[in-house]
Length: 387
Image (tube, rainbow, N blue to C red; front, side, top):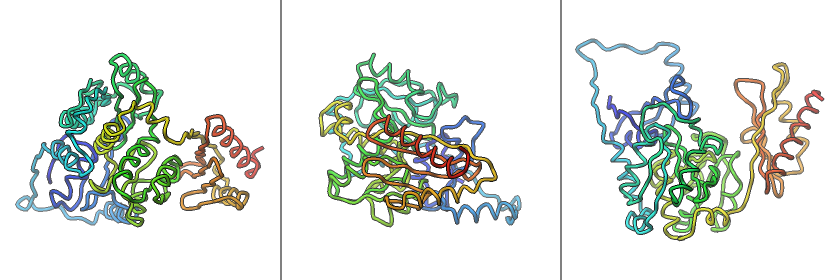
């Protein structure tokens, strides 16, 4: 067993193949408090187990079909605590990352590490890229100073400090550093959904190729991909599904709208360090403020709601009813029901654990996104005879 110590999820993903390990185990609760710590399991490529592999592991655990070694045959634990530095070097070695070019941009940023491993990893990367930074909550105590999900309502301190320090932008990651969001120079959210859009814009400008995100992610990635003359694919929600679609379509970048960047030139896993480097490269080339960069992308606004149902209701039947109702539209059933309209979309997904349908909508303005969601909720309730 190779013990990496305090690490990040993408660091472990990189370490597995470098160490020629049979797999990897990450102890994390991601953006949840530490009492929710659990295991993320990786295969020998450093990629998450798919459903079939996961079921096999659970079956082995349930059957207790494993043997404990005799004392003379015990394995060993080998501590290796330098993998964050190796991870940083892997990012620096990427063909599309030019540390000298980034350094010449004289960037100044504020970093919110939510007192987790990102507070160590991100400063290491920025030092290597010659970027000046002001650390905010970068002591890896595990005590989150605010709700660690990188959403606007949780990032008041970061937004304020970016403005007071006259920084070029702010960086925030989730506790295990596989999600990434930015704040512009005015203290406004760049938008988690647009992290992938910006990184893909840079990569596509250098390397022709396809892109993938999940069905609940912004349409802006599709639009930007089309602007570069390439094709976009929407996968089922979940990193494993996105990675599978990326391999199938030979996508050169992909990810999820929650700020997850998957760049296969590095590895098939969401990686905030890779995302930061690609974003800095884009800014060093465009030479415009982050707010101006954002204004150049297609403007979309999202609404995320849910409808609580009674346990006796046939949720699959309701989804089938919505599919039938909108059969004249562009409908996907890859993951729930996704209905694409000309200038908006709605994605309906059932929960696996409770009688809930989650409703994601996107449109050209917030009012339209909310109105669409409310209309769909009303229609589902009507189908379920709840009105």
